[in-house]
Image (cartoon, rainbow, N blue to C red; front, side, top):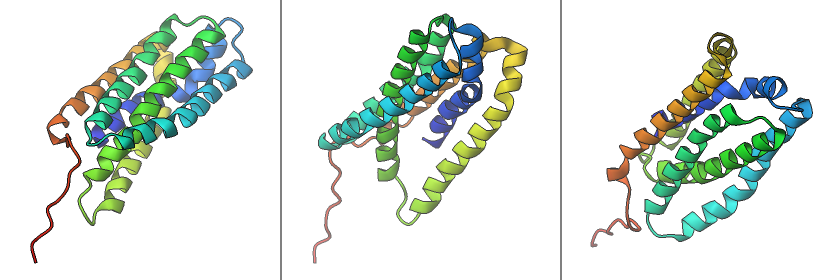
Length: 192
């Protein structure tokens, strides 16, 4: 799960620092305000949707709903950079950021739920720190190379690369399907 998380967020780490530059250079009427609104839409919509979606997922027995939400959200977030290639107006960016936020609102709580349930007892802090550190290093490296990479290959190629990394993240998640608990998992109590 950490490798999937790393692939998805490494890809987005390539784009996030330069998205405002893309908007200014490629979106008709694109300026700092449009970039700020686009980022604001992502964070506000993700934050608002995430809680009711997580609450809904918690009400369904087993992990299979979490797994499908994780796959769907990761896939949805993976396709958004391809939309940037065709975006030309501010509302295109706003809509794409809304779709991205929906994908992440599905993926983040479901990822955390599955990850938490499968952490080895007594290794909770280590497991979460491994994920956080992998994401920090991956996103940091991506941020450093993202600007240079766009100068070499251009925005469109970078957006395709980000989508490919997201699709790889989705494919990695298919490998954990056998570990998903279909119903509420109850450990039998030992007899006295």
